[in-house]
Length: 299
Image 1: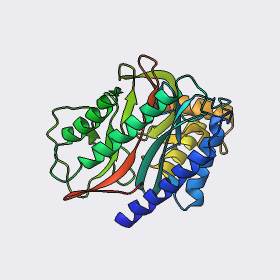
Image 2: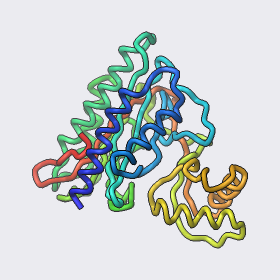
Image 3: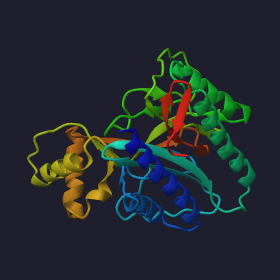
Image 4: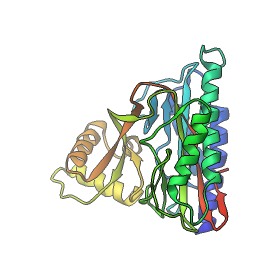
């Protein structure tokens, strides 16, 4: 089990570094996403969720829909969040990249990225068996505040289990009274978000990432087929609608997805943006909790 986690971690670490080299101005977002997802497969893993490429005030959960024409512009602060699994054992990581070097806020946004990374290091330094999980959030928030930014309070890190990306324990990004004690062997994604906004995110109307919830009787044959494909291919892990486009016509797939969402057979993850439309930076590693610290599998 630990070997599989470490292998997944090694894959996403390599892909994260390759993505930083690959990203460039005027690139389509979908091209970056497909590069990341294909590279994960090439290295022997499977995507644990659709690659997220969230830009500026868009904070999380943006992956390209079918036919996405959006591009990455000079001055954009781009958050690349990716995960791989080996037979269900998941590693999750993220990095923020500033595009170009001529924007008015270039140095300021680099400082924001540094704040998210220093908070990640501080949060990881607080992790060990027996520690109250609220202490990890306190370390993260203090590091971000010390750089002059705010921690996004209603986004958290998370525990993971086999085939389960969010397995029940939330790792706060702010100080809170949370007496839950970390245990040796826990698998945690630590992911601070730094911003100069109010530090809250809100849902948008967009949703391009989904997750299987439960079987439902479907009268539409295409909805029944889609649900069977989703359940067998992705189990409880998030998936993108575009991952199904080769098996269904666009019309049939759109109708099937609407029916699956309305019947609550699948759950939509809405794209999140910072509530005051402020730019956000993110950093993330996956760690295994040990008695006297933790082991970073995505370094």
